[in-house]
Image (cartoon, rainbow, N blue to C red; front, side):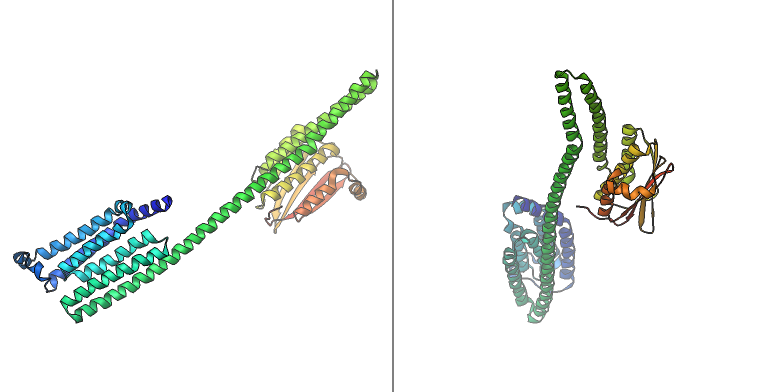
Length: 417
């Protein structure tokens, strides 16, 4: 309720200037009508100052006084609203009624000019309540009809009928635009409700993504650091047991294996942390640059990255591509017996090709099926990741000439679960 009142006060403040400009125009028009059309007001007004009326001073002064009093009520409408909403329209309505009764020659102009003003103010105040809008619309229209009837009694039925028809036309326009405004308000409210629902859905999706990422981090750490440390602890316990039994040779052998496993765990942990860092990057070149730095640090394998064009892939797609490249480089470091590798990427005819090339010992392609079936080089896992991306993984190698792993992917952007 408080927020709604603040919105109404702000709207009333914003609408003051155009409404005041409109009333100034109406005032000058009323003065022009009163000074160019002959007629008389009520008898008691004529008795106020015949000399002033004769010189033409009284009519414009009364019009100016009436118009400026209405302008004052418009200017102070935010303050008046704090007292009571009805007073925003009630005070100027009283002024218009007094003016119409006292000076009828300019009444049609004043009535025609103030009617839209009061309707606009009533829309601002009661636009959130259709029942209140009707309660304020019909009383204002009824009062104006009475004032026009009083005007018609003094100017004659023919001129009065013309004015009433004009006012009926104006009322029809006001009703139409009121209905149009209500429809726009309703659609705006629906859009705001939809926006709120979308914000809620977005926050839920964001929370779900955060939970999924935390679970993924937990799995990655469990598969690398936790399992590696658990194995090291078991080997150290075995070493302690052999030392107690007086078998230092066996204990020394286990320590050597433990050191090797610790180094392997350290390498895997660094790779995992690099992968986690890479997922925060929004571009594939930045991710692959982080991977190349980690591989150089872990395995002393220098990797050059050359990417000409990269499609606009989603974060999930970029993560899968990064993991494929990471595993391929790990295979190079473990099996290729080389200290150099190259990553090339280019896009052509809606196809993106990414190659991991090494200059190591390679292998005979005749034995590739046997290697793949035996699970060597992790090729099965690489192929499964490529399948998730809707792509194809190919391997070309020759003995003493190196190996090229090529990933062929569509350029379509899609979200991965």
